[in-house]
Length: 275
Image 1 (cartoon, rainbow, N blue to C red):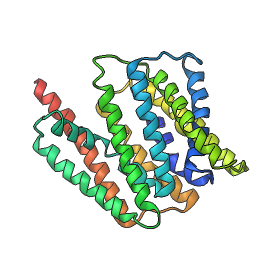
Image 2 (image 1 turned 90 degrees about the vertical axis):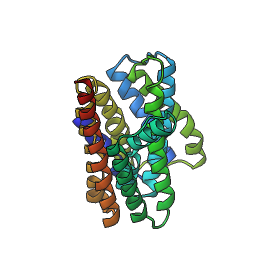
Image 3 (image 1 turned 180 degrees about the vertical axis):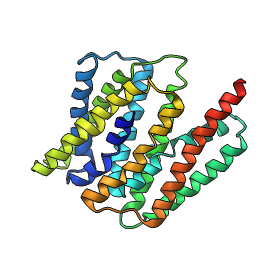
Image 4 (image 1 turned 60 degrees about the vertical axis):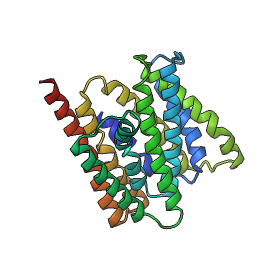
């Protein structure tokens, strides 16, 4: 799980270091990741289930939105805005499921919302507004992925099959855009970071996640994954010189702290309810 979080955190530096368009990177990453995942689980065989296909679709949409967001705003802001998915899930429970929220959930929701506003306002220059919106939208689709899979009437698809299907969907969707945008430059730098992006950042990271999530508890897994938004901006700053604004950093700290607190309190409350 630690390896998955850290490898996922390489998305920013990979995307920022390659002068290909986001769609071209999505296409290349999908192909490389597909064969990495196949090498570790089941070869080219894919079992199609309703849960697997729906989950794959939402993974694909989230992936495309996230890479586009990284291209258009700072990598740190893109991942922080995606990381508010648990708050969207809470809002779904309250608004759609009509569940009465607990006091701490209301407080944390407003806290995280404030952190998002700070991150959003902290990176408003150039095309960052669109990138921020796409990053926030990727948080919505990520939340939708979790909600939909959690309401599949007990049908559980193999996560590896969902990952393979997601790679295929992402490639098919991004290929026409990639062709229309012209042939990308295959420089040594571009090829190196594309390989890191497809093989390590997405392929191996998802293999490690799929294998690790079954070996740790939900609390431990959620807390380990907070390494991703913390680590993400570091290699970008080192290799690309990209820095989040002080306001955006403050917002990121608030969001990460709020989501972590929500995880801890939710698990503790669940244990108390069972006593």
